[in-house]
Length: 492
Image 1: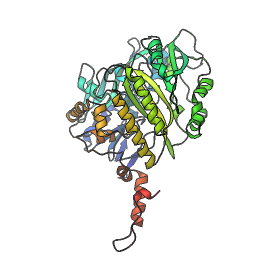
Image 2 (image 1 turned 120 degrees about the vertical axis):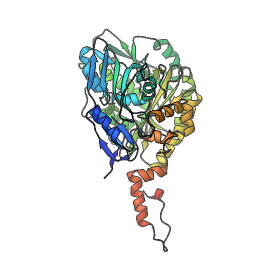
Image 3 (image 1 turned 60 degrees about the vertical axis):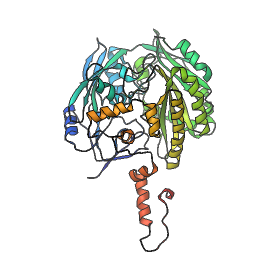
Image 4 (image 1 turned 90 degrees about the horizontal axis):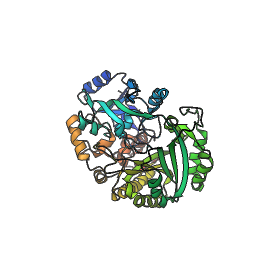
């Protein structure tokens, strides 16, 4: 059987899978999992960026066919959806009733299941990880059984599966809390980085009227922050649409991204560009309008030679001023081609095993940067990533797992001190390690301990590496005589 290929949005993590299937019902999914005697992996929107969607030679299950609304009670402000649904579809369903999603990422393309699997968060003040809005999930385990889990029923499965990156099973349905779709007014404030914590405490923390907030932390100096806040208002909307319309082409955004990351010196103009263009006018919009953003706004025109990647670090709220200058120094030292760093706030996780908001509230530092698609660039990124991980851990924080897996085993264990508990749950619910992906292949002590970040792995498991190997084999002299063949790494 010819292998099929899947990849994530970065195009850095090609995975050759045995077969790709897209079940149309939960019963079909149960049968696929129960009957397949090899490894299984799952994918939705595929916005994780380090191989979390799968691993080699698995049965890859595309979850996007399971996208139905299975229950909806506007009076109770709750909705039950299959997890292949995208957030934009959920928003469209509830908007006519003036309801909104309680917690989701900043962009609406992601699937509900993907958000649950990584325990996502957004810019919602007074909230935190998405698990805080989940009343109940249904999950298919390795034996094909469909189990219901909540904070009071099968709670260890509930707190293990959300944020568990598909390691315990396929989350197929979720019952979610909803919020009111109020109008929100945008306000902008510029300040020195050193003044941000005081600004946040005085204006944002504990303010029940603030819905969305983030601070943009700009390269190359990283010494100023632009605060962007959306506050509840009775003012009428200044836009005609209830939901954000999707453009055919995001030309202005493409050109801006190119200029900021490719033209020398232009990134210094980013604060001025935001002030004069992006945030030029006052804006009042429905909450759903701001929640229905499309990730294409950040998508480059091509990823053929370079790509854009996210990383994220979490530190306790009182350590913001300790971590921020460390992060800035590391990014400057390694000349990281960052578009920006967005600072968000999140409340403590209620109990998920692989929690990133582990003790008290945290600030998240979301780094969006550009890198070349070659081995040298990947190795360089690995070096400064591990320095950032160390800096976060030193500040009592952690790093986020949906991204490239440059962290060492020791760093992973330090950052996620309950990981042994998670792996024990995985052994209990998935004793034969059926549910596989490259994240757990690397860090699970009961797994194959394969590190997809090694050059050797990529030589053996990517199309480019395989092409290099074929070429090297072709020019390798036979046993008798001949000169030494060129090294694979030297072949371009």
